[in-house]
Image (tube, rainbow, N blue to C red):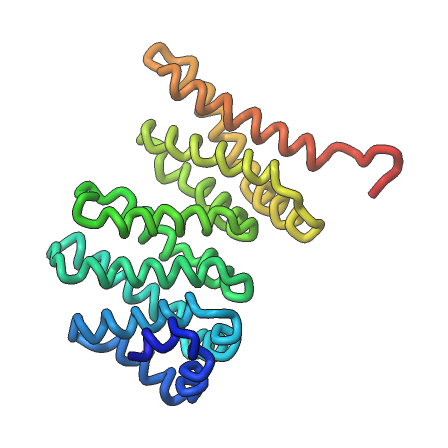
Amino acid sequence: MLTVGLQSGESIKWAEALQSEQILCQILWIAENTLNLQLLEKCVGLILAILESQQNVLDDLLPPMMKLGLASILINLLTFEISKLKNDRIPERYPILDLILRAIEGLSVIDEHSQEICSNKELFHLVCDLVKFPDKVEVGNCCVTAAVLIANILSDVADYWRLLGGLLDIFPFASDDLEARNAVWNVLARILVRIHETEMNSSSLCHFVSVLVRRIDLIEDELLNQQCVDSSPGSTTDARNTSVSFSFSYLGLLFTILRPPRDGKN
């Protein structure tokens, strides 16, 4: 009934009935702790209805819910559902997984709160795992929502620095896995091109330079390693193209950042 009310023309009145911190706390507590699948589905559905409501409802209900830990609760629920998906394959849980993903995706596009979602590394790993799930027929809608969520995360410029740094830090752990290293090169190239196409203010520029400078030795070592791989007899065209793509993106970005300003402009 609450969900229907929030989706009706009387949504503001229904939101007023939910404004009490005690009521919101109870809703979130039930969502996080209930073992009843129907009750869990209704609670997450209510959260989603709030996130999809008109702006006045969001302004009234979302800030206190965020203070009560909405983002972490949703991510914890997602963690649990994906673990269930990997181990038990319970079809009755698939609609709940979809609702949780839709709620997180909805939160990821709300400016005031998107950073808490987009900067969460655990969430990024979870949705990537879901996208790589082999039996997509069972959870097709969930995978689509996960893909949209990944796109939202990658569209958040602030998250690029964390993602870029995290990817660079993978190289030492993938020294013996050529396929993994090539995959990392490929993703890095895409991210660097995306950053290059993004207008950056001075703060963002400092973040970007800081990420690269802190890992300059690692980058240099890996560039040299990749050159050796590309020149070896068994190297493939794909690996070489990936390396060249990243190298040009990387060098082009450094040139753009480090070249002196023209005409005396700052």
